[in-house]
Length: 284
Image (cartoon, rainbow, N blue to C red; front, side, top):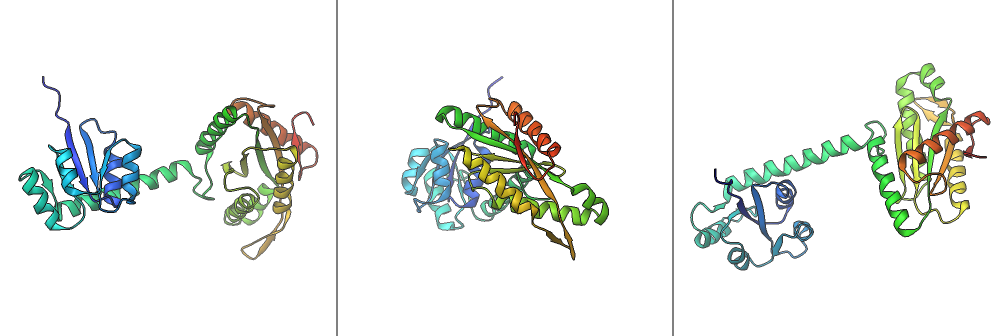
């Protein structure tokens, strides 16, 4: 039985449709994108093509000559390009006009759907923060980077003190609003390069990258405690909570994601037992 034929594709037009084609077909064993062409050398899909080791062109005639034989997709909306390429590749070897616009629309919507699915799979639906899955992915990346660069970073495990009482007394609507505002306040206390995640319930985690001095992590922990201790005006009610924080350092307290989270979680319970509204390390 003969092996299935691999279809060679030339993409003409590097807009969102071209980007979608590259991303959706790059791993398809029966489709090989052999080139992408756009007159704008700064078109986003050309950079993606380069990263995928797909040839990119700014000259149409050169692209057709170098990539032939192939099936060309004209995503530009210019029918004169379809006529020109058809004269080079032959009838039936280019898709343009309504067919190309239909495919462009379909691929663009599929790309947006895939992006939305990925977003939902890796972010908390209430606060918009990274969820547990994305947190562990970021944490493993931080471990790899810190090991390579000989850096130290910190993992903070946070639990809101008194949240359950507010949630029970005022209802889930107020509780959800408090969690969203707490997430916003925590994010405001760290750098853009750091990660704030929601682990579930009223528990949050923070990855503080490249902690150069002991004062850095203490300063951030104190800043978060101060931010959370300010009253929360929610739905006409003023609510107050505090936060207990446990801190683990890489590589001093652990060298795997599981170890670091376990140590930070244990330190958070030390903070709870020491009166809450404070931060602790295991061993304090």
